[in-house]
Image (cartoon, rainbow, N blue to C red; front, side, top):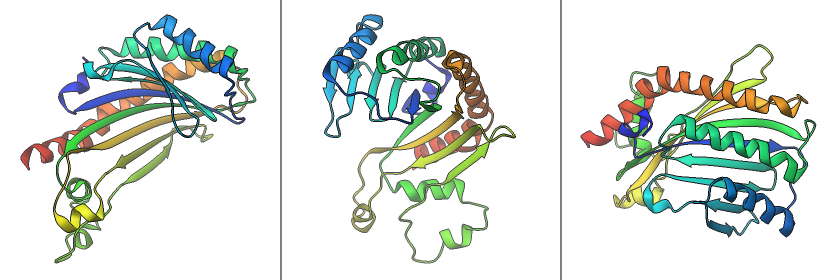
Length: 247
């Protein structure tokens, strides 16, 4: 398994190719695209259409490690949850980027941005926002407000965005998604759900040749992994996982 399997309940690396113009949802185009992906990865046999006319092909989730691919209105998606290695993740995402432009006539003008996402889930049966604030809000100027007498935390989802070059073409985004509701806080009846931490490295395309997608993906994945390993793991993931285990 990847080095992250020991510090979280689930981990995934996702790829999103964002377009300016809506992608075709014609039956023949959609089925041919997913059949091509299935030929590369025969284990991807579960196909369904969501209510918002988004299509998903995925492997059986019961094993805990599975691939998925999706087609949204203006986004082509590929993901691997709990992958055995980074090499297998890369091979899948690169295959999708090679396949997709020929099925949906994506051009350099139509390509808006390429996203590489590192996703971590930490399951916690308690107030998600409270424990995130406890870890990330301590010793900050907001600590007094967070610990206001008799106050209960209802929402704490930090969001951070940075530019990684002078042209603002490559950017990164750290977001935390909590799933605690006001009803749960009021009643004290919490459910076992994941706190999700997403770290995204985005490259705005700006009309570059599509032949550079592979090179960009490799650069973004390497940049994301470096920042995850050096900053996100020790500063966010590990402290949060330790706090959850201590509860």
